[in-house]
Length: 73
Image 1: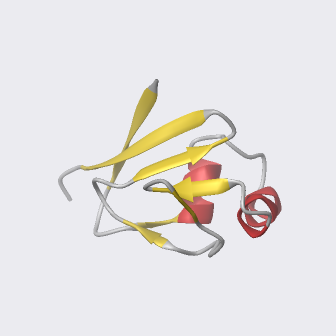
Image 2 (image 1 turned 60 degrees about the vertical axis):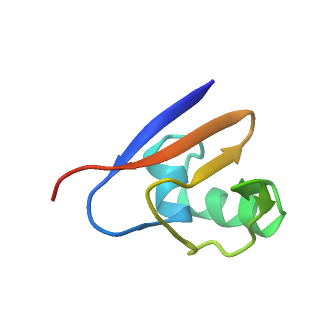
């Protein structure tokens, strides 16, 4: 099951997305998860904690899928 996550603007950083969705408890936990290779973006492992994610991309972490959608500014 996928959860849509609406972003304002052009992008959101991966660590911010994980915190905003409550997938992790803190920024440190987000950084640890990405460094450990536990997060995928569009099916590929993403180790850049501050990777810029844009609408249309899909993030998978800890059994959860997040689909980014754009919302008006």
